[in-house]
Every structure is written in structure tokens, then in C-alpha cells.
Length: 90
Length: 90
Image 1 (spheres, each protein chain N blue to C red):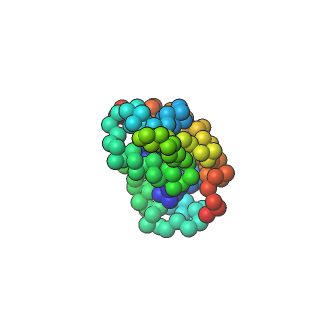
Image 2 (image 1 turned 180 degrees about the vertical axis):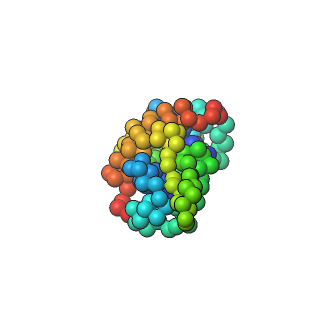
Image 3 (image 1 turned 90 degrees about the vertical axis):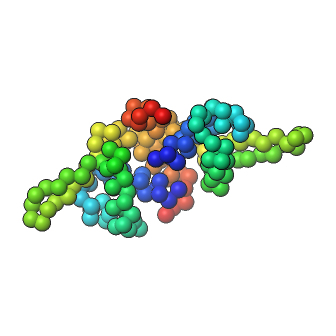
């Protein structure tokens, strides 16, 4: 269930409006950059997350949920509530 | 997402009260016995499903959701609604 649990906490963070890789990573204790990067790429390929490159110097990368991603909110909320009750604390 | 999608449809079937391996498999077009068996074993190891052996001849095996498994109902419902809207038909 580990992979799925990470997916849930990343989505929760994106639903809160966090857009920067570093901020998402810092908000999730224990996640590695490698895993976060893989998950975000997967979400992007699934059309759940959109990655924008803003031409600042250095460039700014932002991650935002697409409409398809935002539509997961109720499911993420229910899964989080279930995990809080039924899974041992991480 | 394939693994997760199967997990959802199996849970949905168990939530409906289907208890027999063959009935669960028949209710899910396209799932193989191998995959269903693996998923049920995993659910069992996670405490989501309970497997009972009833001493008939031949033995009857029944799969039922535990309390932890039944608590997933709202999340499964929300995920199913999301998938129906956002994922291409299988």
C-alpha cells in the first residue's frame, strides 16, 4: 500500500494549492525527491497534474491539478479519513 | 493504474456481498483468476478481507470484508464515480 499512500498525500498537498516541488516535498515527511518526482511524472502522464515552466531566471516549475485531478477531491478525502482511522501511524 | 482499478472493482463486488471466488471473478469482465487470487491474498494480508474455509465436501471458501474493509465503502464509491467520469471505458 506504500505507493498508494504516497499518491494520496501528494494529491492532498496539491489540492491545498501547493505548486512547487520543494514545498510539496517539505510538506510530506519521509518522501524522497526521487519518489515525489516519479509520482508527479505519473500524475502528469495520467492527465491529473499539469506541469508549467515559467521563464524566470532560473526557471520556475509549477505543478497544478487539472480538472480531472481536482475531481479526485472527494475520493482523496474519504481515503484519508479511512487511512487515519485504520492504518497505523506512519 | 491497472492494479488500483482492479482493487476498486473487487472491493465493489465484495461490498455487494459476493463471497465466492468464482462469482467475484465472473462479475468482473477481463480479470484473470491469477490476478484476482493475488489481490484477495493482498487484501487478506492487509486485514481488509477475511477468508473462511467451510468444511463441506468439497470445502467451500468464502471471502468477506472485515470491519476495516467495509469502512472503505465511501472511498470506493467516490473513486468509482470519478473513474466513471474521467477514465476511458475499459
